[in-house]
Image 1 (cartoon, helix red, strand yellow):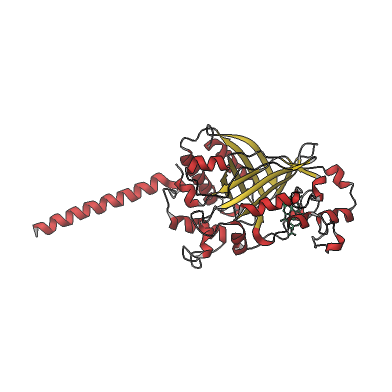
Image 2 (cartoon, helix red, strand yellow; image 1 turned 45 degrees about the vertical axis):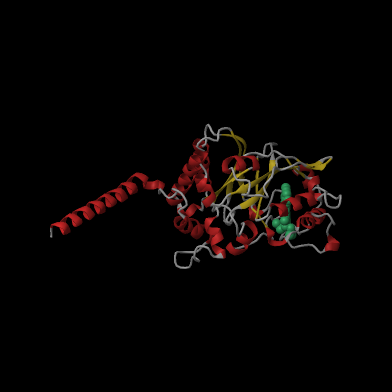
Length: 367
Ligand code: HEM
């Protein structure tokens, strides 16, 4: 009887301590959720996959299945409906506690997502080759990643401005998006120097400022977008390679080109983006130079000011293989057959970088 009482008392104490710890954890972590301590795949799965791939708790596929690749991907990769994006490209000036700052950033993101569930807030954090190597000390991860090298010649140059870290913040609401950008800057103060900040938005009918609909043949739906953009196996499963280039348009010159010629240059009609037959388009039309099927996901958006400053397109694409995007670039800049993409007569890239967007699992492992 005595032994039984002692046993009961001991287990009751353990039980009470556990309950206290759980309550304390809930109170302290509060709105920050406390959901980023290590590789909590189950939590990541429910948070990210449901939002990113649009399933609910009843029809989410089990973790480890092909579809669940998206579950461990950052939610701003395959997301579809954003109207605004803010791009921050930065150099990393201090690597100390960088993983901690990344976790703080993710906590802020989740917190804003919980507060404004209708806003469709999502994001991608990605790294240049040098930064990824420093942060992971792992030569095997993202083994296709490299620094962007300048391409082209003469007046058709794709310059390299390779930087260390990219934030691709996206949202349906500009106000919520701007909050995330503000907090991002605050969180990384002292660790990064922002070199490029671009505020983008979807223009009328998803048109670029050259007046053509951009994104017509982009992969649609979670499965297609996942297949195009995410690494599907190995240690980088759920990760993605990115190419970014900010283009500055020469709209005065473009607007003087007759619409029929503009259509030959792009390779599609201006009003509804119908593909032109080969014999009606320039052999070096933009679509002819870049066609690659469903292997790349483009998420570009227009940016600009009306007072004579820069106006153009922030081009950004995601793929499970970096070489697809590099091949498109080589093709546009005359490295495949000596012919440049005709669109480059009217728009010029002023930045250029390759990035790797780690999976959530990889992000959580950073120190
Ligand atoms: C200022 C720069 C650019 C503008 C204004 C632009 C605009 C367009 C437009 C209007 C289309 C046709 C509609 C569509 O299918 O989306 C298109 C298609 C496409 N663009 Fe661009 N683009 C630009 C840069 C780039 C770059 C740098 C790449 C890749 C390196 C690229 C890759 C593609 C691809 C893959 C397609 C689809 C081609 C097809 O299969 O029909 N674009 N772009």
